[in-house]
Picture 1 (tube, one colour):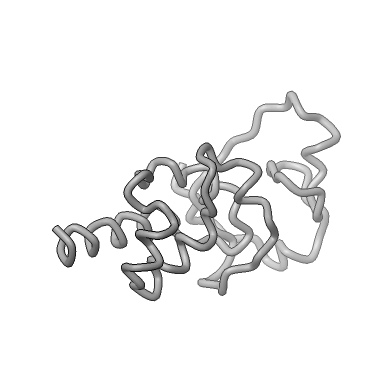
Picture 2 (picture 1 turned 90 degrees about the horizontal axis):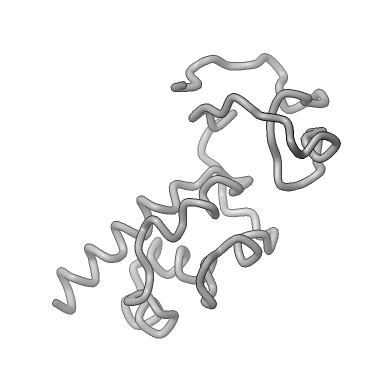
Length: 122
């Protein structure tokens, strides 16, 4: 589903019908086998990155996903190359995008970084 509906003060109450990787305000950890109806709603506007350390727990490669994302955002080609940008694909960041508390578009950021590297470096 698209998730184009909004909850009034949804951030201010306990939530029983949403999944979460943390135990903050949701109770999905009480029933881990429950099936949830997921949608694309981000529950808010654009936010700054919140460093929680949770990206490294779900990232499939042995690199630093947060640092690569930041290097892509400020277009630092040397930093991107040093962090292993050649080894990643946007799909590798699907889980980090799903659990991101900041709701940043990780796959889009990585795609733009890879496109920049191809354009500048070749």
